[in-house]
Image (cartoon, rainbow, N blue to C red; front, side, top):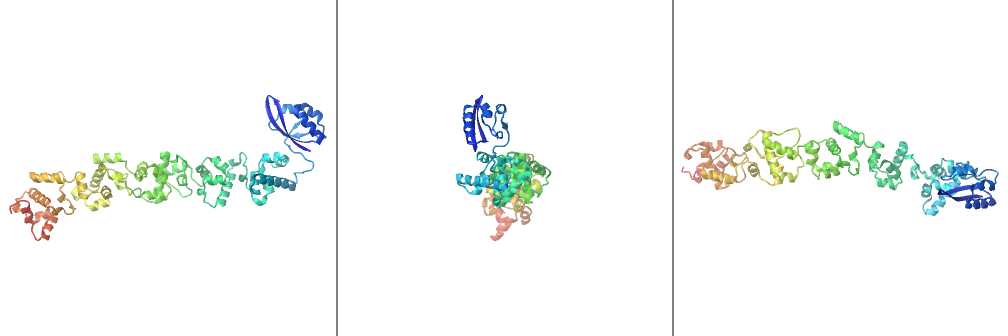
Length: 484
């Protein structure tokens, strides 16, 4: 007869001790009676059997048991009828245990088999069976259900199981085959759904898992590649992972490395990078860190001058070429374009770069040097832009000069520009101002003005204006009030 007895010992503290021992019926009754009295010493005298009873106690009072003459050992189940050295007996016992589990939990037999733990064997009198497998349920279940192909990680993985890299690698490869996903498409939810929560807990994050299993460069290696500008294609970089860890981009070194990698990956120049490049390469999160501004990202990565540096260069009329200015970027911000200081700096930079005077600047110069888009975003005309930046006289200033018949040379007049504003010659006040200026500029008397004077002073457009009406240049002098 086999008895499962829980013995309460009261001396110092309460212990609930499971005892499994082989006794006949009369011995069992007496054994229970003696234990109820707490007389361990009488157990040795009254329980007489051919062999000393052998059992295992959880946290046993070893001194008391030793005084009672009992033996503490690994055997918790001793039977003369069942020999667990035979595979057939082990398989039958384990399968029966799994069936009872499936019935109790109302799950499939395979699921029930994966739910079996060490205590299930012990509580069902199969301690001797599980002892044969080193107290590990997996070998017993695997032997009993070879058709299920149960893996160790589908059951309770004991302590130290995930410390072995071959176990971690095997589990992850199994997960990839089961889910039919690529290595970097696995997320924490997928791992928990497939019983690999222990593996996830071992790493405390997907990035560490990917690095350890050789799919992703470590952060230190990635930063080293960025510092040397020597990116590679062997593995994936941490920022390429579908979901980076919270706070990943809080480190400025990581942000700079990711932007440098983006330029390397796209094969573009820094000034060609746009928001779409961030989106297509999985860097939307880092773009959000810069509030959607590509310019801010390039400034931090050292590819563009900051607004403070740009304004300082503009004030000092000293521009650099080591980095990019805001207007040189493909993806310029409308907010920046609305800044008059920035537009002034862009004009000064253009004059510095081209070596031209303001009146020699053309639409083509603006377009080729990417300054024209600032005008489009600010909805400014070319003439108004030059007036705003202080290189051309305004209409109010021109009227004052004409009235006083005193002109100046510190700025340019609109008619001196290579690209005269559209419809400028249609206005009578403008034509009067031009002819008054021409007389002042040439130092001649009005009656001495000739056609070549108009051509030499860039007024061919005005001359053609009168020719279209069938009139000569003297009509312009008369309109200005000169007697010719």
